[in-house]
Length: 495
Image (cartoon, rainbow, N blue to C red; front, side):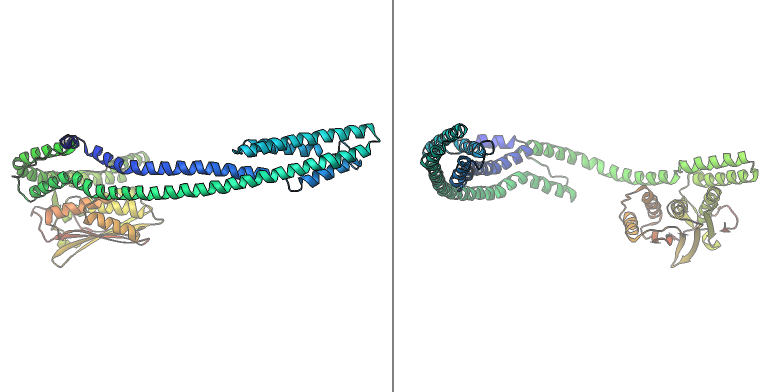
């Protein structure tokens, strides 16, 4: 039996084992709850029936006898006519109450009392009819008085006494049922305590034993993977305690078998892939910028502004020349500034009312190197996420200096800036290399390319103040570019 259970347990999936564990805990608890609720429901129904019976019986007013006798007397002395008399309605209501009580009581004795009350009511109806007949004939006052004194008053007394007996015995039954219910409840409480103790013991056992049984193969696999992570590729997994674990064990062994021959290849491929990824991102040009620029050129040509068309085409040509640049990934700061200047001159045509820019980069730092398309994404961010969201004229300023043996280039704008939470999110995304949004990805890409080319001590730093603007600082090494840098003119520009 034990071996059969072990074979079943080993061939069972992990999900099925967890389900079995839940069933072992939930079935006894559910059984206890169902039994308790069912017993309470039956007792409640019985108790409620008795309460309703007493309430219905109480509708036979304590003044029924007095009210009925008085109403009959008023009819006899002709203080009320037959049509004005309420005797019929009083008898009808009394009959309805008796009918409802028949459906509520379970006592045979009280059922007999209800039968007697029904007969009394029938007698009262007969007496009422005789009185009405005498009134119609006239001169039978003495006969009616005799009926009232010898028949009506006696029967109403009998009804009142019988109703009192009915209520007494119903209340006594209610008390008896209450005592029985208390006994049943006490028994249920004791049984529930016993069952609860058993369930708690079972749960404690299962909560200690089953998790250990379920997690043992996982712990063994964890130990093996930890050994592999530390460089020991000689270990192998040999577990057959479940479908998932067996499959995972076989897969882990296959992975270890292939790891030795792949590890060096993966390292090289990852380095090459990372460089290629950033080179591709570096070479990408926003297609919307190209479309908008061509549309602006067409619009200027249609307007007959020949000089502006020539200027736009020249700037666009310079922009693409630097972007392509014979496939180079690192260029001089002079070329990068010219690239940004071309970009801003093009955007100046589109945003002439809101865009101004200043470029003030000292000649002494123009010969140093910078990854291609580093400053332009920062200027684009300043334009689209800073200046465009403000009213009035916007200013983008690019300046630079050499400080602490590093080249520092700053891109500043007077746009809408960022709140503290937003700034923290941007810094965190760049620092932890988790770009959460497309606009943050541009900053992340710039920083990563600088780090990849020059080291982790270089990169970008961002600072911003809400409604006052944003400043991005680029840190670069004092690394000379090639000696054949082309001259592109004076780079102190105001527009």
